[in-house]
Length: 116
Length: 113
Image 1 (tube, chains in turn red, cyan):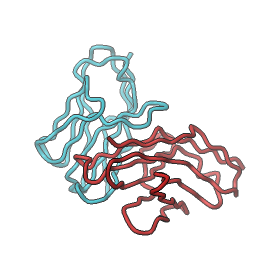
Image 2 (cartoon, chains in turn cyan, brown):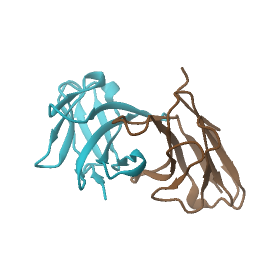
Image 3 (cartoon, chains in turn red, blue):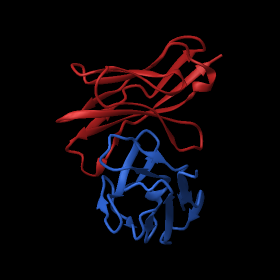
Image 4 (cartoon, rainbow over the protein chains, first blue to last red):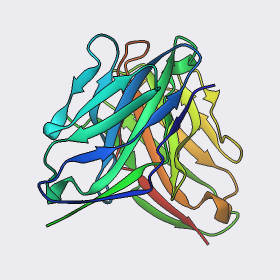
């Protein structure tokens, strides 16, 4: 079975400081990994994904994530946070090729609050 | 380009009532999904479909039924609503076996009183 853990319910950071949102996963095969962001009263928006290749993946709005196979982690990072980055962030995993129907399993979400 | 459209956006039901949530996508995606989002629990998969005329159970299927009569539409039904089904429901779609993520709708907020 595939699973995802986001150990922090909330992350607080000052504007301009680095932002990190943690994610660890468990799969029996190789993973596809995703980050999504959800703004209030909106659906989830795709930020970035890891499929294969370079362990550092760059995505939308200046976000990046680093895939670490030995630590089974896929932490989301942004060098300099903005107040507008305040939102709910979800990590998701798909177990290749065992996940029938291309099913993604989502973590519980991490709320990011960027203070001016 | 509408993407994934969910209707209605809000609904209040009385216990025991029934309703259907509609999801429509215009991207010609093969796979479609229904998730529910509850505080602290992330998104949990209710049902999914890998093509027209097919459906399968997800993680939390009890109390829900689905149908995919047309490729572009995926309907989620509640036959007898219960307060435990108060949630935000999201529909999503994907191309299929390709290593893509999902495209999500904007959600339906359902309250069962």
